[in-house]
Length: 445
Image (cartoon, rainbow, N blue to C red; front, side, top):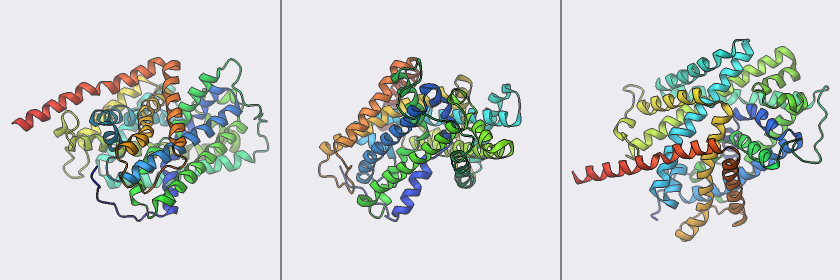
């Protein structure tokens, strides 16, 4: 494989550490407590699942780091899949990102935003869908006004999202009226199987860790990736896991697990229990701002994936997808298609259904990336690797086993969801070959 021009190495350890945490910590931690509680009905198992998810994320991040430092070029995971497995799997990942990952995240978080807003203001639940649609439209419109405006919103919400997390943790853990928790022995609740608890719990927790796949993207720009990248990944994701453990412990201390299970406003209700009416409402507003920023992030990034596929002629109607707005130079059709798919998803599914489908489909490709560590070492043994995954081959093997469990257990426990996710992804195969034939005909002409 030809060596690529190296990026400027300017990122130090501190910047790398904050980037890891800033990328991963998001709105998911506020809303997956209800699903984890319902899946486990056990405080001890609920907290253990956050630890397992954190460990799997660290293992995955270390695998990704080896590949990212060896191939420090644009394209990220799509590029890694192409080099290890070929163009078709690479296209299917891009296809899944365009039609599932980004629209489903936008739809799911828009539903959550609307649900929290309706609860905060005491409005009718019949307004949830309309408000969710308005939310998705507003952020697409905001980004069509220019990347700079979208970036300003992102930077502001990045700071604000940490405030409710810190407040809930600090006041939740010192709450004098806290619930008494039994954390040993660790077991699922009554009438809950280990398989159901682990699968449902991991799908929920892995959504809250979403974003870890991006941590390897900075590898080619780090001053000393061999030394600092594993420290940044282990420390950053380790600290993220501690934050998630503490905030979930605060939730569990605030309300009995039965009141958290299936409660779509569990975080807001916990804040009310911890801080009282006024403080709880302020924290809920902070959560709303955090979620709005998260939707903005997916909107900004997602439209550019479809645009990039258009530029590279790897998507049907590529010449349309690479068109931008006349003045702000923002991907036009890509943003509108993303919005249209998100609106359809708002009507078709609830928050957990959409996020579980995201995790299931993306972890198929994540597991392939973990396997790519072995493939690329064999395929390109002389490729310069500024960082090699520590604990090889066991760390990649653990990551593959964890990813395989998530995928296979979902097939057993949520078959219809898995079939839908796989079906949408496989629809990309005829589109890929149609595009290949179209390109070949253009070359002949």
